[in-house]
Amino acid sequence: MTEGKVCKTCGAWKPFSEYYARSESRDGHRATCKECHEKRREALLQNPQRLEAYQEQHRVASRKYSKRYREEHCNDPEYKAKKKLADRKHYERVRDEWLAQQKQAYAQNPEPKRLQSRQWHRDNPTRVQVSHVNWKAEQRGTEGSFSYLEWVALCEKYDNRCLCCGEQKPLTVDHVIPLSLGGPNVIANVQPLCGICNAKKGNRTIDYRPDDRKEMSAL
Ligand SMILES: [Zn+2]
Ligand SMILES: [Zn+2]
Image (cartoon, rainbow, N blue to C red; front, top):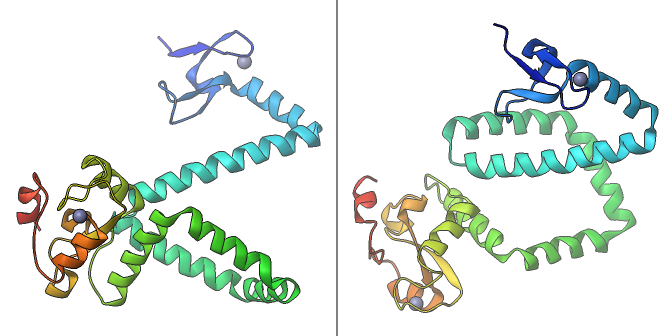
């Protein structure tokens, strides 16, 4: 028997070959059949206003999706290598045009961009913190990086408390084995400490985590 389903739009039963693929769906296909889908697309193309709204909606959704994808895969070496290559290729392609554009925009209006960026940094202190730690580690040639989401999850795991004094204060990234002693810059070598406890710990290897000793021995 051929497999298929009822189209959500026209209500007719059709085999799966009459539906476009959609990997997120449970059956791997769109809810609307190809014919109805094409009809809707045609109608959309006739109506510029709706088309624009649709495209904007799609842009927002795909931006959100790729952001999540990046954050989930930022530690996957294969993904990293691919991304680095793609980024470089893309940059080479658009470099001259982009530089000229930036220069012109800045010459016309130097303040807004700077203010925007400053505001973003103010609004996203934790993202800034994580990227600063990763940047510093890369500067000194230390292997590894961890993501904003990994850091947030780690802090939440410990109830957003400093693992040394137990207080709920602003937390800083501490490397259990300091980078200066050859510790890697990976989440398994990271513990949240408040600024004071982090400074007190200094350049020593102290693991304050109650339940991660096993992970450490795997490093
Ligand atoms: Zn249909
Ligand atoms: Zn503390």
